[in-house]
Amino acid sequence: MLSLVILGVLVSVVHAEFYPTYPNIERCVGLPVQYSCENTTVVTDSCCNVVQGGLVLQAQFWNTYTGLESHAQLLPKGSWGIHSIIPLNCDGTTAGQYCDPGRQYDPKPLPSTLSNGTVIDPYKGPSVRQFIQEFGRSDLLHYMDTFWINQGAPNEDLWAHEFSIHATCTSAFDVACYEPGYKKHQEVVNFFETVVKVFQMYPTYDILVASGIVPSNTTTYTRAQITNALYSQTGADPWLNCYDNGTVLKEIRYFHHVLGTEQYGHFKPLDSIISSTCAETGIWYYERTPTSEKAVSD
Ligand SMILES: *[C@@H]1O[C@H](CO)[C@@H](O)[C@H](O)[C@H]1NC(C)=O
Ligand SMILES: *[C@@H]1O[C@H](CO)[C@@H](O)[C@H](O)[C@H]1NC(C)=O
Ligand SMILES: *[C@@H]1O[C@H](CO)[C@@H](O)[C@H](O)[C@H]1NC(C)=O
Ligand SMILES: *[C@@H]1O[C@H](CO)[C@@H](O)[C@H](O)[C@H]1NC(C)=O
Image 1 (tube, rainbow, N blue to C red):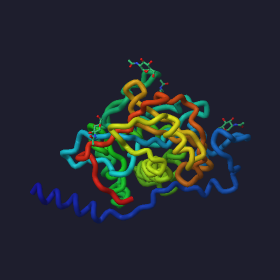
Image 2: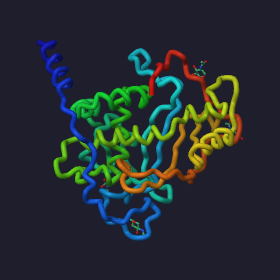
Image 3: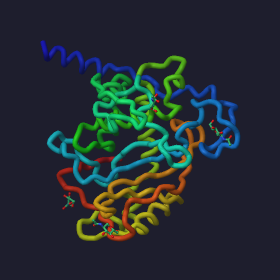
Image 4: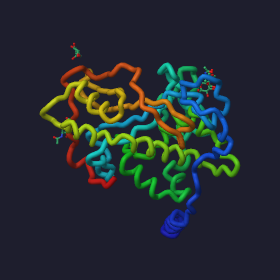
């Protein structure tokens, strides 16, 4: 009986129809075209432009292990991992967190209480992994399981967290932007593919290798070495994030203003406006534990 139920689930997944996920931008034709945070007239349609959180960050992690190696949750060899796209206000302050309680899919909200006192309840429903399968997007799911890797918990918990905390505070992912014909969770799948698209603009690992910056447990790098390498391909200084008093590199965030929507529009690289947490010198960019990596094709 149980195996029949499992078979039923498998069949329904295999038979999931491909269903388009992008928003309807017909309404945007003819509107003024301006970069977010650079508009000289009031932007009126929040489905066509980024009106809240116009400073958009593409964030990547460098982890050396996952903690779930025994479940084959491994890091992509020769690549950084995806963190998210993060909306900030034009001045660098937060553009909000968990902005829509009706689209809260994060099983472990962090923070669990917002600064205005709102408590975010843990989500207990079907996983966002299932949402992706329902749209027939095994291609996207495979990519996410390769490059969007969590530490200490399953990958789908990270994906759900990023959608719930950030995409709900980005107007172009509002349900209304997918009308007519909105299919439930369409914007969740669309957020994930948008995160993947923006991540693919920045092959951080390869750009660093080209400047002789490779993970090492014997040599440290300076902040300028890392920044200059990335600047050479982006024309902008990203934000470098370190732990252990600024000595261990763990994250890079690339800053942008966006023309049009995050889904379709153009990302213009900008210098970080936030101070790095990394020291000037003596930065470790550690080698990964070999058993924490898997070979990937990109
Ligand atoms: C740019 O658009 C935002 C959002 O609509 C608006 O608040 C702001 O006033 C606009 N800036 C200018 C200079 O019109
Ligand atoms: C607190 O902030 C959240 C997210 O921005 C918002 O949805 C909620 O309405 C706010 N609650 C109060 C009481 O202001
Ligand atoms: C942290 O780093 C700063 C300068 O990089 C140094 O002066 C300070 O002693 C360090 N603190 C600790 C606890 O190692
Ligand atoms: C390099 O150091 C990091 C941090 O201590 C460790 O997690 C990793 O396993 C080391 N890698 C190798 C190849 O020794």
